[in-house]
Image (tube, rainbow, N blue to C red; front, side, top):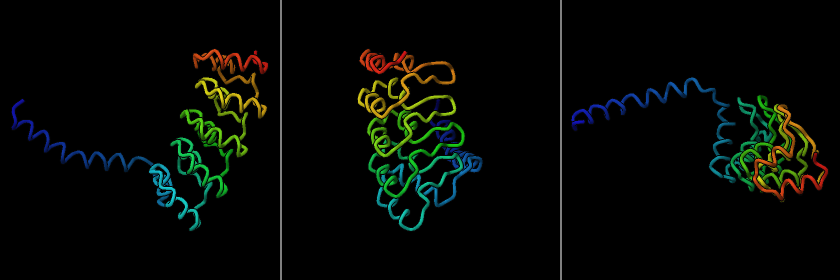
Length: 192
């Protein structure tokens, strides 16, 4: 490609990209301006801004247009200190999103954030709450090979024989981890 064609192509994209971005932003439903800012602050790890917003009356359990609470966002981001702050301010550790039924604990499990899973369990998150597809926190911890989380969930009384909506048991999920110790722990706890 000659340099003139490259320059013309580059100029074309310089002009068209902002228009394309505007179209995308126009069609994506945005949460309210205040809620959007708290989610941005959580994603940026800006705990001081989140604390200030909550101090000025932001609803710690408000859901954005996607049914996500600030605690779910923190759990997804792996922001343990942020999650701790939100819980201290009254965040519902058992809130479920509207589409999938995921809780902060399930979001943390999906994103493989063992530290947040532990925090949420210690703060009373429902250990057997199922997403709409039947997934439980124990299934996610077993699949990820989080031995300490599996042991903690079992100690708290998690259902070792839960089955998801496709008929897969906790043991089937554990097989995904490739860690025989997880299967052994589950069987010792009565998994079938």
